Amino acid sequence: MVYEIAIIGTGPAGLEAAITAKVRNKNFILFGSRNSSVKVAKAHTILNYLGLPEVSGEGMQKAFLDHIAKMGIEITEEQITAVYAMGETFAIQGASNMYEAKSVILATGVVAAKPYPNEDELLGRGVSYCATCDAALYKGKTAVVIASSAKEEAEADFLSEYAAKVYYIPLYKDEVHVNERIEVLHETPVEILGTSKVEKLKTDKQEIETDGVFILREAVAPGKLVPGLETEGAHVKVNIDMSTSIPGCFAAGDIAGLPYQYIKSAGQGNTAALSAVSYLTQLENKAQ
Ligand SMILES: Cc1cc2nc3c(=O)[nH]c(=O)nc-3n(C[C@H](O)[C@H](O)[C@H](O)COP(=O)(O)OP(=O)(O)OC[C@H]3O[C@@H](n4cnc5c(N)ncnc54)[C@H](O)[C@@H]3O)c2cc1C
Image (cartoon, rainbow, N blue to C red):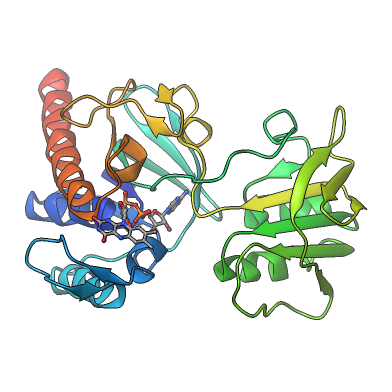
């Protein structure tokens, strides 16, 4: 099936884009987390969201999820690893499936972390952002997983079904629950070492010999997610209608730049969806 719109991200930007796409009767798919976004759920008290005075992060999360449930909007829980512009459609690579859509809205939030030294150089040569996608390549090998949140524990468990040895480095404070074959290291990654491929991960405590380093962050940098997309630092370059340098590709929320705010993200999600609707109309007119 070719969707009219694929929305990537379930924070305020992605959810509002989905609501607008639904109101406009579009055939869309929404990728992200059934819990919305950690940046929504983890906030203490939010004072500046219209209609929700002094709401807790959990309260806002519930309000958002209730709203989309009431509209019959479903979330496909799949991490998107790449989006390729193929002319009049986009090929969207998920951790387990491929999808196709005529337009895409990027609402993946912003990546706070800087890449580790050598991360960019060794990407695809031992550095990976998706354990589910690349686990089979590590049959009998050693891999290190650097995880930004507990939701990556399932990825590490899956990887351990293939790899001979898996080290797990949690960058979060919650208790870790991975299977007993995985060695958990409470260390800080410093640098990835290797010339033509990954050889070691240097931490603040040791150098670990490894064939691969899986860096599992909440979001992938936009230029890596969509090859060829014009970016400015951590952000996608956008126009006022939230269009980007690639026709049919729109961006909204933190990924589209400062300020990082819920209401601004939701507003941009609405604009991006309306712009995607106009773009689809243009495509239809061109085809006639
Ligand atoms: C602790 C804290 C408190 C805050 N307090 C306030 C406040 O009081 N007021 C205010 O206005 N703002 C506040 N903010 C800022 C606000 O959280 C952000 O501006 C807002 O969440 C951005 O929304 P977004 O939809 O752009 O992205 P996010 O909320 O970051 O959501 C991004 C979504 O995309 C998903 N995703 C990412 N990559 C992929 C992928 N490859 N495939 C599938 N899904 C993906 C993520 O899982 C997530 O669901 C606060 C932020 C924090 C961290």
